[in-house]
Image (cartoon, rainbow, N blue to C red):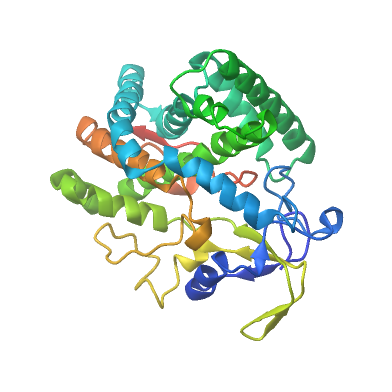
Length: 359
């Protein structure tokens, strides 16, 4: 296939193939000749190769070891009351605003930003600027915009690390600053990864989740009548979207064969977990949205050694939205035809541009 920027790539869509390759040591994010590598997009953060081939595995293991202590199940349970509080505050704003309201703008977008920024110690007054910078940095179409956004976000995080060195607080950046052998440069890069990747996907999933439920009134009512189904509903919401053909970008580190395809070292592979989540061999009637679906072994958070460390946080935010939005607005309904809703085609994820609702 050709990527959004016209480069050649292999698109992998089958569930078993995507799952296996997500945890295949023969693939990586690095490339032997980065300047001439195929790119999936123009984002300077996510559109092309990253890291060095001889250090990639060690660097990845170190990054995970530094992140994991802050995303344990125990820490996430302790965070849940604060997430619920933030959700309630945003719902108060929607109620005060009155109908119609834009759920994407007033709930789906701000909640993950509030959570990840609070977790990392970004002051409230800086969060709007940081959202604008990260949205620009992840733009897959406009290279110049991505460069400018990345530079501003990077400089901001560098200043934040310096501030936390002087005045540590009860946040992840401050704790990383206390790591015995972590340099400022490493902490800045870790902070960038968390701040950008830690909210972008969840922003999209919350919007999609509300849309799916409002488009299936019987399932909305089923969930309203039986909140014990919220966890299952969240998993189906995570599975259901069919994203643009971007996929998880990986480069072949060696020549290899997948089925009958001959992959050369350096080739770009896009592991399309969204397509894998709709493989009929694994998910019966995959295009049917069903909050009672079990089992639901979706690939939204990856698989194996690269499984997303932030998955528990994303799940908790989605569950909080369902648990608090639906009882608060039981008569919620779409305020525009589904065919008129717009989807972003220039971002890291294919989220909704807006989601107007009434009640």
